[in-house]
Length: 461
Image (spheres, helix red, strand yellow):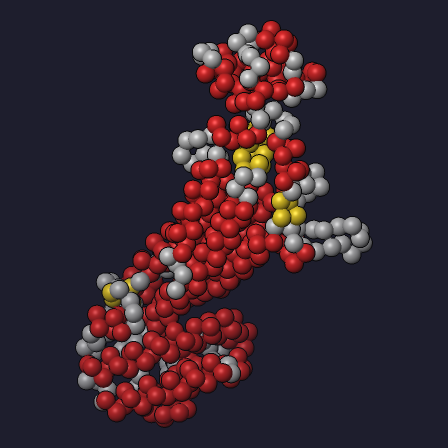
């Protein structure tokens, strides 16, 4: 059944029919389409354009269809309908005859699909937020277990200062918390109901749009009918949230791929998220993390592509907007899968404390602490920085770390040094020295772990 065609004398060319059909991907909107249709029937009853009996029969038919599709959607998958709206209406007409044709009065597929998509997004936001929380909780658990485990921190991919595994894990918790905040912010703006806007000019029936929006669980009706049917900012925002979060996951993946390499040897991923080689028996490849890194690029591509689609569209609705769903569905599905696999990686990760400690004792990661030590002895920081730089050069020439340089040689460069400087350069002392809020001091890391545990506990039902 087609929802249009009275003015046409010929049918669609099969190639264009296939090109035009959106049912293969918008069929996942069926719960929203049925929910919106039931609310539209109630609104018509309230407006007096449908009788109470007619409205009840329409709702019952729609509920019956929803129950059928929940159990078996094979009829939907096999349908030749143009889109999900055509499919639902054709099933109504099959069931109710002429009454089924009454429901669409005052409604366009333009406001219908905009409403369906917003209802779908509201549900997906809830699901995605829960998936974000699960990954955050896994990272917090890791941070608690490894709060004191030293880890070389890097800038420019050069060893820089000593952190802990827990502190590093909490950095990604902060990123994911911002992702949650952006997701919640996007959810506020998508919480408007376009239904009742018609094709672009509103509806001629006395529909109470405020009551309709409330019935569907929206905060309010969209204020402008032209904007309501053409607005896809909410899609672009969700794509951006997914894209930026995917970038965060990609950064975590990049860190851990390196940590799991034989060159670093800091981390071993579980067998559950790694693969082997078809040729080289010894290999254990971090494919899970590599796929997260790669799939993030796909999400970013979808965001860029959709923004390019939006940038030149005149008002109001244009069929170009059909591109929103494939971009959105694929990106949110991919993002959710990446979050889930990242959680599995975190839950199964095992860090090699001995290897990490050895790594932290080489590469002059305590040079900044030595400069601070000299400042405490009364030197201006720039002089302390210069002297420590000279000591590093001496250590490189002699093949020694800073704490291994004989005191008499060290004092030739920095006369204020005493025997206590060696103790100040130990891993525990270095970490304890980082005592400002947000620093790598294990005591502060443990405090942050407890704060995050309390925050995330609020999310449990």
